[in-house]
Length: 308
Image (cartoon, rainbow, N blue to C red; front, side, top):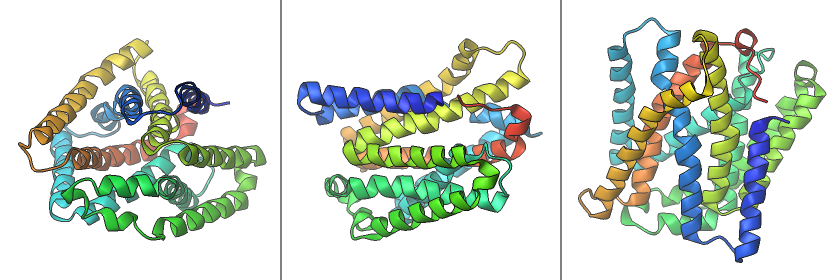
């Protein structure tokens, strides 16, 4: 069993045990658990984008940073002037990126099939998150005036239809390619998606998402990044890897903390929840670009990624 899945199951069982022992997980504890998981694993998985890109491309660091921060600025401007478009773009990019990290390793599949799996799988995960936590999401988007602009996106049955469509589409395409993937892989991937949806169903919004994001996505990507760098750098170790991750992880956490403080003291007229949305969205676009380049430049056959 892949260790990212073991981590996912362990976190879920731990949270269930805590909830059983304490009679339920308070919002404060949910925030603490989510902050720990995202801070220790979620944010670090994008903290070496510059290293990954520069290892794969003949370009200067100045050009890379200029492009990277231009994308961040673009996302912020879209959120400020067109918040609904910002949200939809963020959800679409996240769906593709989540699916890509899950299926990029299957190099025997046609590119068009892989892209369809990326999109359908990612939409299934995010639409499941929205469907199973719709009441909580609507409460959150009603808590501040600037969040009311994006509330209509989560109302109605749009995500229910997306969940059904994406899940069935994923199932059909996966089964149609069972000869290429192998029956064992098909069963495994269907089982993983089912476990993710079950976790999103039984856990509160923050817990369900942060467990998935930290374990099956971020930890999985961190392993891929480590194995890539171990092919490029002699005597590369996890200690050195953590050292590379630390600087930009701390910068990101400090920047988010400062933005939340500015929001808390009404120095900027943006609610704390929207600050988090915008910050994550702003980091997602350039990170997705880097990882698209990373997966295209390095097949798993060449790098022998085995996330187990």
